[in-house]
Image (tube, rainbow, N blue to C red; front, top):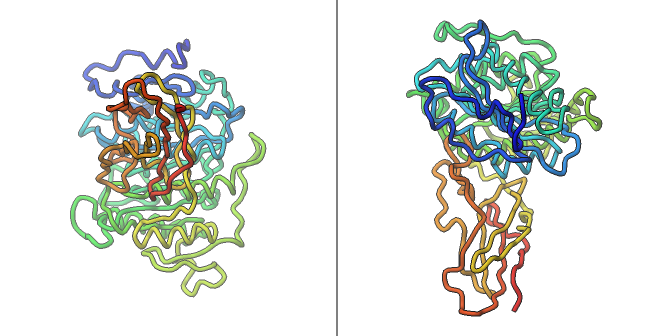
Length: 447
């Protein structure tokens, strides 16, 4: 298997007969982005769908400490959305903070096919995922990827997958966020084709947060997604009754779409990675300090230190510390998780003729909302011109239903439509996070 321009040769293998072409429409994979694709298999127990794995590794990282996995949900639309997951600037900021890689699978599930054939890891997706880490490790010059711990985020069927990976490999999982999807721990007559997992003591020590929309059975008790709440309650009760480090955050604004969950999910994974990643690669994950835990009612309200919680601890959601407890209380009220810090300033501003281009990193806490451009001290442009995100706070890259950027990826580029002939302008570019805070400026041009 050869490597060409940062891509494994498998990435350009022909698609299976009848495979929809849009699964081949993804941003280019050039270092520090790498991609591998595997053909569907007809072998017993192997993955029956083709799959792309795209990974981003912060170029300054010498040894990868972990892998953050952004796992899409079921259905052709959600699967295609996985093609841009590794390009999300906000998730990249989390990865960079912890010297981790960011990996996004994209399973090539045709519409109407059985999602369990990939979202149950035992149906071949566990083996394909681990093979991808080995292959991508060789391609990128980071062989440590094959043994690095994982932080797992999953939506819908992706939540089922992420929870299943916790149960199968608890020693590898630093933390897991399950949005609108959980695995089964006991057989469900209503879903006889879904196999239950075994719960081990090791899985009880993995920090998990179950997140769903209030319209998925909490306040709206009928419709397509009404059963999500019951599934989450059963999973939570089975885990928490045995002392698991698991909590619940009900999104008060949404149904199955992801909404503003990333502002709590990224903070949650940030906190867990800081507490659990070992100092030296190859060492076991660290345990969460028990004395800092807070507890909270799973349907929302006020959290309290575990020692002062008035209710039954076995019925209460677990949170790792006070900082996360306060963020949780804000989120379950109105999702307006706050951020008192400004975003990073843009960098590497380049001017060629009337065109400006630049680079920028997202604010790790609240992402990248857009840019303000000044010419000679006057605001002349805002990017995007008309922010549009139907599922939550507007962001520069826009977001799809499954919490990944839209294609084509938004470009950090602006052309001055009215430059003065022969004029020498000074341009200043400010980054804005999603709560409206402005960065320091990056400057181009001199009078």
